[in-house]
Length: 309
Image (cartoon, rainbow, N blue to C red; front, side, top):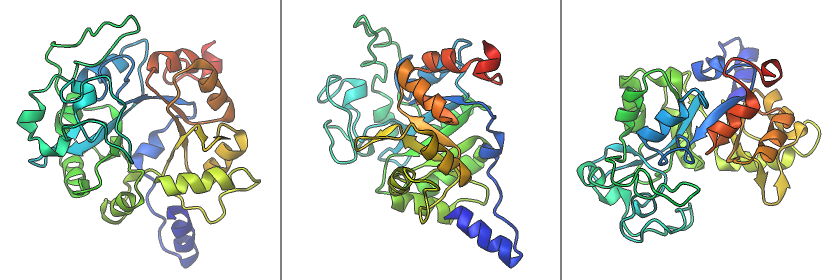
């Protein structure tokens, strides 16, 4: 979409769209993206998880976090439509996470004010391998996006919009602009309508990732030489490593997408074998709950894995 538009503008003599600063910053070696701020090293989507994922043993270059809005229209960082699974209220900790199609919790994020949300214990359900819950009752709250961006003023973020209705796009763009954080932010919404709203209303040079419909297109067309003909393009590709039984961790699929100008980041990979397969395919980043494991495979930030051996 954007690249085809850019080609048309080039032929017409008009200026090409600006390359987002987020994309220009990307190094030539793969990076570590801490999924939900590093969901295996701290309570997901919390300040504490991000702090842990920044530690020297991990140093995740990008933090992926999820966004909803409260009843009083404050942007908050949480994955599910409901608060049950991460805070222990309602149906409690031991339920499946909410999906696009199904909601398993009882208490919806958008039905609570910010004050009500921040009374909840966002560390209640984080569980270690030995079954302990070390962060329960330690004062960890559901953070606002403002708090997160201010607390980590140089950290780069992938901001995933989970809420479709009511739209959070206007408030999100206003906040990121107010905090001068566009250069270190990339926006993701798997919903095509939300992605199109971003593309229409975001300032020039905003980094926007591919919606789910485009991922499906590239995943199938990418199986063939020079795949992707007719598939849309955005600034980056944020894609699963498998889809409907298809292995997407292939050099052909990854290189086809990269040749269209989109860096490729694969999710959510939490084991060494799958990480290595994605790296062998040439991805630009590993999206993982285990930034510690990804860092051990990739090497130090700024140093390629081969150079770091």
